[in-house]
Image (cartoon, rainbow, N blue to C red):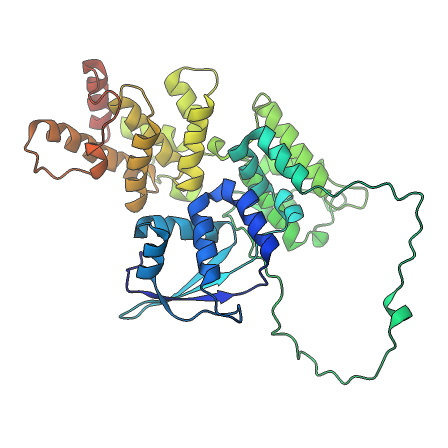
Length: 425
C-alpha cells in the first residue's frame, strides 16, 4: 500500500515506451473491463501531460490533476494502484517538504499478449461474461484468407539495397525509446524450487525452464489456487518428449483439473483463501482461534455458499465478491469477515453499495488480517448500537449513516452477533 499523497505534491510524467492510437483502443476494449473507467481516464490524462516531444512532462500539482478528473484523493490512489497492478504504470517518490513523484507510463500488451496472459485473460472473461468475451476475441482475430493458390513474390532487403561501410559506435543507440511493457506481478503461494526438485531430471530438463516459464507457472497457480503437490502433478503431465514444458498443454491441464475439482465451474479469484503470510501465528483451541482459522482457510465463495445455504452463488453475489477482491484488493479472510458482519447487521442481505462503503473504509484502514477485520467489525457494531441510543453528535463511521435495507437486525440475529463478537475478546 502506498503512502497517501497530498494535494500540493508535485509529479512528472515519463514516457517509457512508444504510445500510439491503437493503444487507446486496447486500453478501452481490453483493460477497462478489468480495472474500470477511472484508472483508464487517469492513464489518458497522464498521457496528455507529456510535452510535445512525448517523452517527459513538466511539473504538475496533484491538486490540479485530481480536480480535472473530478475525483477525491482516495479514488485517485485506488486508480493509480490498479494501473500499477496491471503493468501500465510505475510510481517513484522522493520524500521532502513537498513530495516529488515520477509516473512512468508503459504500453498495454498487444491483443495477442493480453489474451495469452493468464491473469488478465481470466479477469477479462470474469468481468464481461462469455458472450462479450467472444466478441472481443473476434475483433482481434487475424483475417483468414486462403493463399494456397498464390505465390510469394516479395523481394528481400538485399534485392533492393547495397551494403556500404559504416563505422558504428557500439551501444550508440541503447537509449533510443522502444515499445516497453511492464509485467503484471504477483506474490506466489507455491515453492517452485521445491516442486521442481521433486520431478526427476530424466523427466524434466530444469535448466531449460526460463524466467518467463516460471512466471507463467506462478500465474497459473494463482488463478487456479494450486498447491505444491497439484503443480508437481500438472507439470509432470505437461512435459514433452524433449523434456520441456508445453505451455498450452499445461494451461489446458490446469483448466481441466480445476473444472473437475469444482464441478465444471470457471476459475475466479473468489476461490482463493487468505495468504499464508497474513494468517494468524497463534495456535490455540479457543473459540476465537477456531473462528479465525475458519475465516482464513475458507474461500469467500465457499464461505458465502455455506452462510446462505445455496448450492451455487448468484451472479450478483459472485460479482460482488470479485469486486471486493480484485477492484478493492481486500484479502480473502477479510472479505469473509466483512460478509459475515454485513449479513448479521443487514438481515442476511448483501446490499452492494452498503458492502462497498464498509469495504472502502476497511481498505483505507489498511485491514489485511482476519484479526484486524474482526476487531474493526466489533468496534463498528458497538458504535452502531450506541449510535441508536446516544446523541446525534456521537462519532460513527460515515457508512453507518447510509440508508440500507432493514436497518435493524431482528432479535435473534442481534443475539447471534453479540455471541459471535463476545468470542472475539
